[in-house]
Length: 318
View 1 (tube, one colour):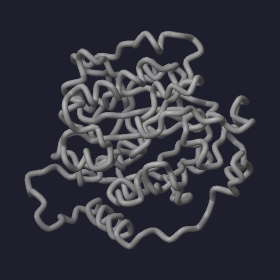
View 2 (cartoon, helix red, strand yellow; view 1 turned 135 degrees about the vertical axis):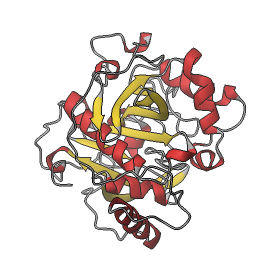
View 3 (cartoon, one colour; view 1 turned 180 degrees about the vertical axis):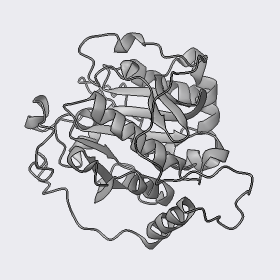
């Protein structure tokens, strides 16, 4: 799947959402069965719980393994840190605005500009018991680059744009949704037809649609079979659409903003997680700069992934 750079699909190869009848309505084609979540998944999580207190139903141990990051990931992080101090990488367009990944984490939230991507509530989200606490109502959040808003996808409006992004070679390598527009359409419709455990969104920054997101219940996703999931774990997948927005630290900036938004809007959620492909070093670097920790390597049906975790209890420290 994608990444925060061409590859920063914050999620990666495993979109999320599956129906309880194993139809896989919102899941990726390679991950089409609903997981049997561990017995604790039906109860509310304690946001203040000790991050190491729970283990999965699959025999997994603690999810705090100390693993050495690949050298290329460490190099990317150092590179981004250098950029944040004003250094310019070789070959970088001098006219291209720089993005500091160490920008202030708090920013005022001005009014949302009136754009065609104004928020709307898809029919599958218009219920009081929405599994993700009504993403459509989360509202805007301020970033150093302007107001950012997650707007649930409307197929008739957004499909051509999403399909074009998915056909970018760098995105296609991890999302695997390139080809005719119907390929992307089937993927998005499967989520919209589900029960609300995955919500596809357009990321609108400063009034401009510029990224594709999937916000999902990781504890109700097939991913939960492969790591010690906790109730209300919330997963992220991200694709930064425009090539000009990649490689500048923007992915890490937005990942931090959206993870903070999840914690603010989902009080039952103690962790935000993601599972980028282990080969997707730009994506992993973006998560690390966004305050996620590298928890473990996990073998998924279609890839070996890096389990990235951001803890509510550590959000002000990382």
